[in-house]
Length: 178
Image (cartoon, rainbow, N blue to C red; front, side, top):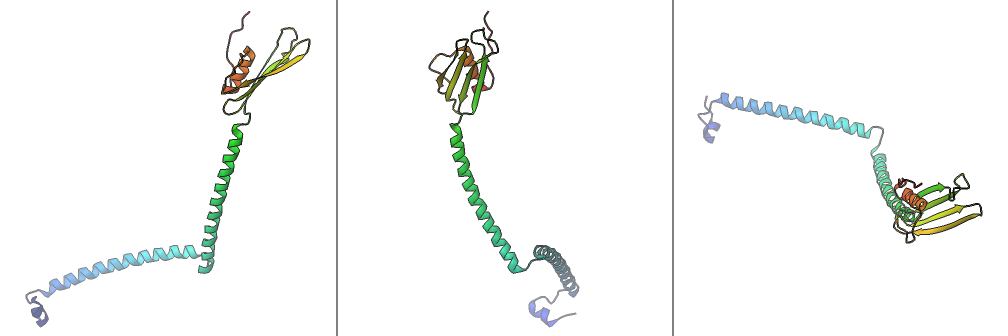
């Protein structure tokens, strides 16, 4: 079977069966593409319906605007809280937060360990030691300044222990002399 159209295009010797097979393959590929696109469209439609369920487009827009306003408010609040936390932390650095106390019997005569050494330090180990010595004659109190965990004045054994407890949370272990 010959065709003037095929002869004009230079395809006069082409077998028409090959042309039909080619067209069928192309149609089959197009059906597959259409089927895949319909499946994707159906999936997208279901997601859209789930997203829009119970909402109108206008109310959804309001919801989105409200969410952006909420996010802006949360960012502002977070920044404000961060500044406030920094301010509080700065104040807290100078507050006495480390405490060490050692009770002792100053003269081995009173009993009950009525004397004490109390160390109060801030975060930088600055502060003071309050020492109260109780005897039968009365009670005497004095303080020693602590800077960076050190004292310019020599410390007694109990004062050293109170300072060590305040700095490290545990006393110096020393053997008592008899």
